[in-house]
Image (cartoon, rainbow over the protein chains, first blue to last red):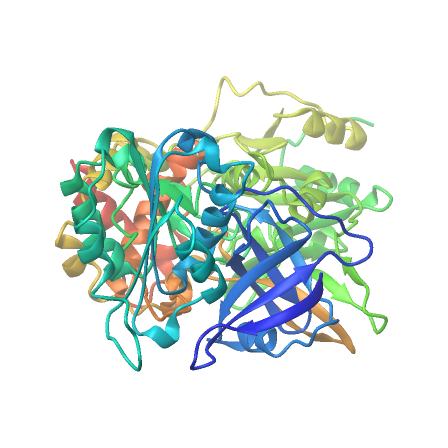
Length: 269
Length: 337
């Protein structure tokens, strides 16, 4: 994969999005929003990242990467034109077919928002928008400086076919938007529970406090889909690292319905 | 020339015939420290034929402790290092270890995704097992669904019979090897002679009941008390014939950049620690519980058999005598005594 560009997403510089195009000898693949890939720099290592761009723009793939270790640091400091390895697409992705015709609550926090950004851009594409009902996006970060995808957020805010709530835990600077954690804003939504499905991805605390709110709104566990984080290595169900019960997050997930998760041991949050 | 394995000398002759097959690699138990381990042999005299069970399992023959996956030369081309082994025989494993290989087959070569590195080694390997005449104090194969003459995973089973062994061809691969060595196949497994092994090998915990109990015990406070002495050293995993978790690391070998997989264990602290610092299994009790749950519940769901064959190595190896049989007893109902 050829590095096309690298965008620093957050004011503290800790999160960057790299855009990759298919180098000579490789060709674009079909994928589902919510799937991930393993990015590889030989001699440094390999790590899994959710595909942050929509499958409707398959020629370039975005990955949003927080700098936390050796591989992510190397990825942050790549230069346009360099090539890296990719294995993917991996995992199951969001159940886009089952979501057809449903009203959707997209709920994300922190940089767990990356595959939800992929899904939202997928759902908003002119070829797909008519296939879904009402679309509500609730996205939160700890402070305004940590908000990702500002171009997308501006774009979505200007549209009338998506309701966008962007919130921060602590307002700073000239922030004039919503304040408060994600679940407190989900709580205020009016939804028709029978026709609504929720897609949720974020830090464990956000998930823990959002699930009871969704329950109170009347959503069934089979209509709530969570994209999980687990430490992974191989990405193909062999190395044993990401197991939750008899399920491997890398092949059976990372997206699980809450109904399915409740059948598994309670390690998911 | 055909032969029956009527005594120990005949067993040595069989081994010599295996070694005489052109291009054949023979792995057998050899002396290592105070015990035995599986390694390649070049003459029959190197093999330990009367060992009670190897200290280390033969797992490294199919999944080396460090296994090169990819290499990148100076031109930047990345190549897969899929092995191309010649024919090999794994001689003298006990039925528990053969059954562990049947389990590894389900992990690496079952389902939608076959591991080509494992597949290559496995396809080249024929397994000749020695049935057990006696048990060690730590043995509990029958409790995990195996037995002293369990044929699962073996291609040829040598069943104890008088002073010698009765040859049973378990698979087509085994029959071909018997033909190639002129060994007479005598047994169909119907009249086993299990020597002194008797009633004491009666299964002591019902596996289905244990699984059901474990599935209901995720939040049981006894996990804390029963596993409190665990040091998290991982000896139990590294000595286990069916543990198979691995890590993937990059490094350099003779000036070439390589990516390798290395054995890992869920008993180590960093195993599930996420990039954010969050760890779904932060305590030793969480990690030991995962080991138990994985072996006696999750593996049954995923692979149709437990991830433990009852070889007893972990019972011997644990530096603080944390006996997995005691946990099976605690959660599995009737108990061991």
